[in-house]
Length: 413
Length: 88
Image 1 (tube, chains in turn blue, yellow):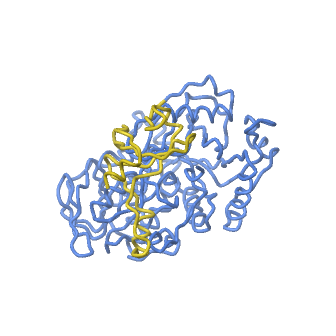
Image 2 (image 1 turned 90 degrees about the vertical axis):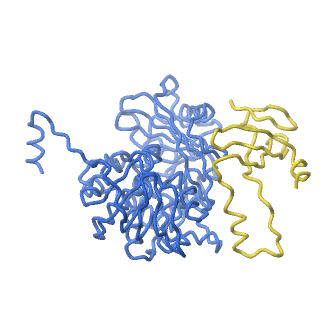
Image 3 (image 1 turned 30 degrees about the vertical axis):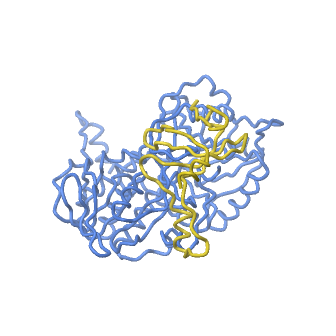
């Protein structure tokens, strides 16, 4: 490796390697068809090819690679959830991120800088104690810190002593971090295509041929593809895609908006989040401050960002860090999130025997990219759901065994 | 600021309102199996198109209905709940 690096460094023309091959012709059949060329679908393709020896895999993407919610999320990686099932799953996700650059031989810029969630009320402090105890029990690094602890972790915060939004303490999650979202998708795509996975961009699924309880083929704008197994991993489109196969998911779509400021010198070295203000901030490696919050207050399929939400996020950010008041916004955007009633994802089997679901990722999907791909690949290969995924089954709604994940970002309202 | 025209209070900032989701037929509690109950509770309408929803004007605690286009983010009309009963 060092020799290769040296050679690259000394070469005159800095050869650029094309990581992702051009879209090939569609074959008539594949062992596995993955619908959705975002992080989750590509991660599953990688795991199928590398760990399960399944190479006849096609990833079908309506638009371009990782251009949906993979490109729109705010890249928070954490496992400080509240249900034991959720923590166990996301903990595995964080652990996979810790070694993802090595796994993919691609720098995903993982930065485990820790996440600080702030409490402005006693009620929030109580919920933090519960989350910290659950986290410790499950083996994650999550602890409650007092006002002094908050000041030490993030000295530039406006503590608002004596004010209406005084910071009473925080939940410090040392395992929390961030990574470059595009790099994660590109890394998986590069690895998967090197092992024979075909990535078909601009290939839209328009329907399913269902015979009995099996999907025989997937109909696309580029022709019919017969399939052994099918995975739906289409983010905000999950409801519509599953409905084409006759599967009605308990999902409602809400936009989630975020924005970034102009680049600033590095000043924020943790992820900071406030439950009461519905605002969180992280400084990217380019220096831009990424600001996000909860999802929109009513159902929509529109990805236009709104002035209301920008004002709301700016208000929260300026309250926490008043010196941001003169800083300009560079960009804002919105993605469509597929929200479930209990703020937990839907993974595993569907009513059809060979149709698998990796859905309901709402506002919490990016952090699960490696682990969802890994576990869904295992599920598709074995045809049985591993224990870690069982609590997330679609049947939980029919049996009223919901997994109420109040540690999710959007669950705070 | 987005405006929503409340049938009782007139055009107001949409921040004053709360959405309660699409209108659904209430199942008969005596003749509904668990499966249909779960459907009723968890599988709300999520069509890409026009929906009729319950909304509430929070300061006056007035519930009414709004017809909205979810793709264009437009409020088509708002009306009092009595009109829903008359229509049914």
